[in-house]
Image (cartoon, rainbow, N blue to C red; front, top):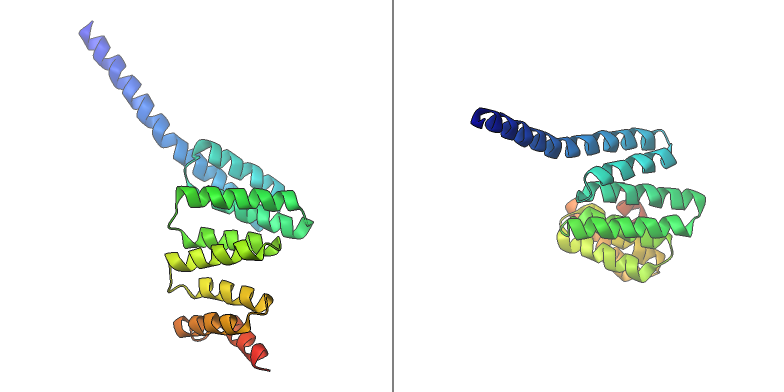
Length: 181
């Protein structure tokens, strides 16, 4: 009797460990499918796959961020405010799960930017810089926003920071040249 109890216990523990390891594996399969679908511009199907990935591993920030990026892209092409709101919610969820990820803040900033919410875009872009002050991309985002808002002295400061970090960044060079004319 004791022998069978031990065997059953081992089987139950093995099954439990297998299940715990299976969830991230299945989530990753759906995530990779979503990336492939996104690359081939099957956005709605990619969103479905990302929802499956999130259902298997709801606390993985990358899945939420990727779904936010997908929704933001769809919102731009479809001019759909509801998709933009979904994108913002997914970026906020990604930030809650990984508050040190500057790229999630930058993506949130672009969602606000394309929605015309420039004060929140500025806040998000600044938050991305706080997380990684040596990231040229983050300074470029803020510089482009300032240019859009006609805050040219602030734009120049940010774009010069871009070139100090990454001297050959073409957009920063081009925008600074345009501003000097």
